[in-house]
Amino acid sequence: MEKTKWVIDPSHSKIGFKVRHLMISHVLGNFKQFEGVVLTEGNDFTKASVNLTISSASVDTEIADRDTHLKSADFFDVEKYPELTFSDSKIEDLGDDTYELTGNLTIKGIAKPVKLTVEFGGVMKDPWGNEKAGFSLTGKINRKDWGLNWNSALEAGGELVGEDVKLICDIELAKQA
Image (cartoon, rainbow, N blue to C red; front, side, top):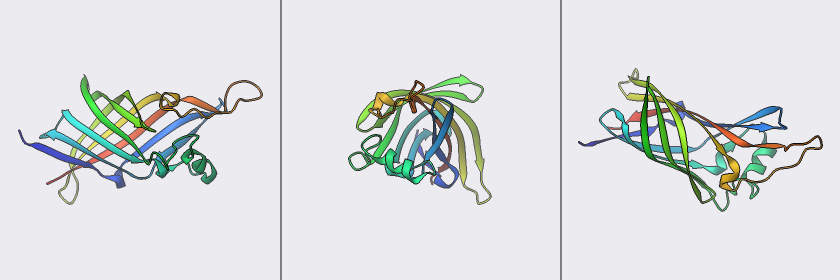
């Protein structure tokens, strides 16, 4: 069967994260520049191949000084590692339009397997006749697994930045002709 190509619609997609700060609250952020291609057999996403590229320099937490720190060698080291990538290796149907997507996430040249929970929103034509598919993805990684080790000890105990990073993504794909 011929492959169907879908691309991420960046104007209707968001790749975000959430990490604990001061052990009492969270900092939210996202990446502003990314592109991705999904190849399927027709509209069957259970046999899809997924490839995503994210510009590490596009990290945005709405605080310029924090973003500058995140782009430094303490975190993403964007001069040396301009991209984060994800490529899938397996999609498992869990029922009720929920899937587990397993793949390799590469940050700072380190590739590690991750599992993401995927909620399939469905396929729909927009008012201009373009076919779109919607997904919400969530997961959790330990940032230190990718060499994102910087931290600062707190006077009262604990650390400034949590190790666990929650991934929160909403993706809309556009079917290509």
